[in-house]
Length: 92
View 1 (cartoon, rainbow, N blue to C red):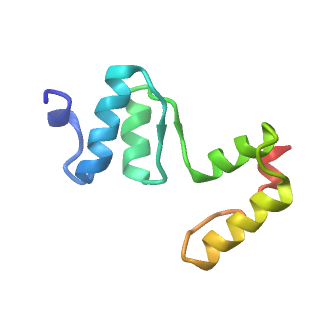
View 2: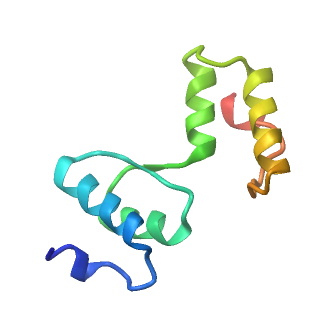
């Protein structure tokens, strides 16, 4: 509960909960929320997001580049905001 009091009020309760769990367990945090990412960095928590998960899936051979880019394209078509149209720049 003490850690909750140190979090920005603008954070949604779900992100705040995930941050506190990551701190207590020494875990990384997966989020695309800019405020949660900033708070995580302030607490030295390793942070990644959707693009990072897709990149790791390609690097580990779980997805082909084509499949990962197809998923990204579907996500963008559904409203996901991405600075990249392809993961090729991130995988190399």
